[in-house]
Amino acid sequence: MRKTVLSLVVVVALAIMAGCNKHETYADQKKKETAAIQKFIADSTIHVISEADFKANNNTTDVSKNQYVLFESTGVYMQIVRKGCGEPIKKGETATVLCRFKETNLLTDSLQLTNNVLYYASLVDRLTVSNTSGSFTASFVSGNSVMASAYGSTSVPSGWLVPLSYINVGRPSKAGEETAKVRLIVPHTQGQAYATQNVYPCYYEITYERGL
Image 1: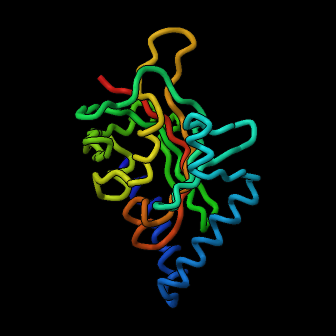
Image 2: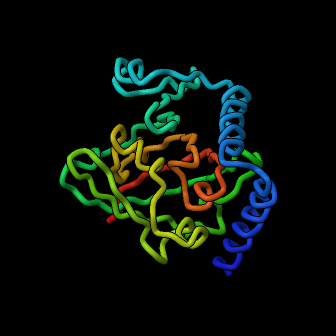
């Protein structure tokens, strides 16, 4: 039943995007993507800061000012809501990471996919993440991923890996400890398979927790 629901959601989203993109060039699609991102930033009163300012502020974003850092090389915007408990994934380490997320298509301004609802309470997206000399790679574990079921791929969007250099990935064990949480604006070049194919940006809210 869950796979059927996911398939329907994605098929509808793909049909909408295909209809919109039928007579557009790639350049036209990229212009629409850029416009959608800028509209979202303006409508959400996001304060964009540079990587230099981000680093000068100890790799943090001021949530009270709604700050997002823009990574120029990828086009990903990131806000760290919570750094999280525990420790970062260390160089040379491979870890299991559990993610809850909401994915919004910024072209259609609609919630496209999520596992952060009661229906999926027992299904957390499980990632296998490796840190190789500071570079992260990851894949979804089949059978434990709404993303993999919806998009037919175990590849983790590159945009999801950006926060891992700046957050802790721990497992809350006592009062006051929380999982890391970020908000991301991810262009199609750093997104999931359908976003890449149909040239649309996504907004994400994601939590990261270390698995057992």
